[in-house]
Image 1 (spheres, rainbow, N blue to C red):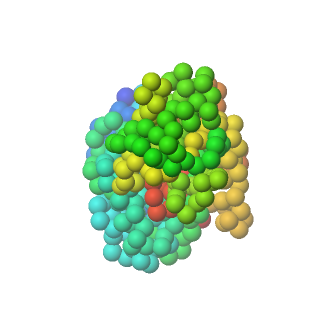
Image 2 (tube, rainbow, N blue to C red; image 1 turned 180 degrees about the horizontal axis):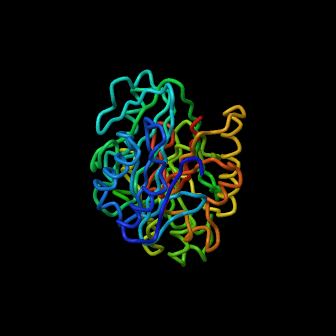
Image 3 (cartoon, rainbow, N blue to C red; image 1 turned 90 degrees about the vertical axis):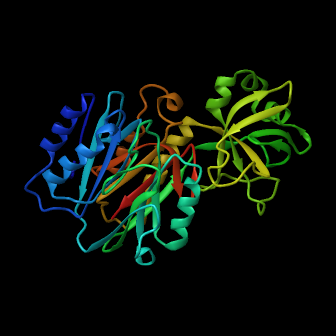
Length: 367
């Protein structure tokens, strides 16, 4: 699989041994390696990194931890997993960082960024984007353990990643797979994470009108199917479409008696309640269709050159709970990309240009 190795479903010492045995210790050292860990293996990140360095000679490893990882054309979830991919990048200069944007950011052409589960995660993405014109991809990990990010060494609490310059190209995109249910609305009353009124009417009145009373009465379906998107002020209220970098909010609870809707995701982009919102329904079939279209479009943007690797981040709000049993996004993606090593993880939020978004799938091809 072009250098991609992985193991899953065993205690971490056996997982590490399996991955190290699969790696070619005689291969010329690559400048960069990608590694993703699935809980609960993340607690042993230090030992795993030491083993990877000794086996491959690669000193700079970049990655993150999550509830699940993607490798070998499938999602690895359950009892821990490790996926590793050495990247032979000749003529490429690395600018790794943990915390502040690195020196040399201005000359970088692309970069991979992982942000912590912190209130300023969105600000970290914006700060890096302000320092570079590089194409960025990445995500916020969803691990419940420490050392959720790796940039040379395990790290927690700071944005980590690497910018690349020189003989390397990356194309990236993002998709949500959502259908609009109605026009945009002004938020006319609300506080904290609660929307009370839209366009002067109770928020749940609009919800019932646009999504239907059945969904309003079934809180589980409400949370699974619907999201709210922040609508920029320059977009007319008559209608809008979901942009890749739009801030999305989940619905936690709808209270018809009070007419209010409690939402999640406030503060991810550094702000409070949005001033204008639009309701969208998440569509599993559309999400898979858009994912395949995104992969085909990115391949075309590389001009026919086969990618060296693909990075794939997909929201924890997707997966079996969204698509149902028997559907694996990584398998669907592999049908379009062919023999390209795909590595990545389930994410809590996804990098979309200069911002973070949610409920999305982010794909990047490194050429």
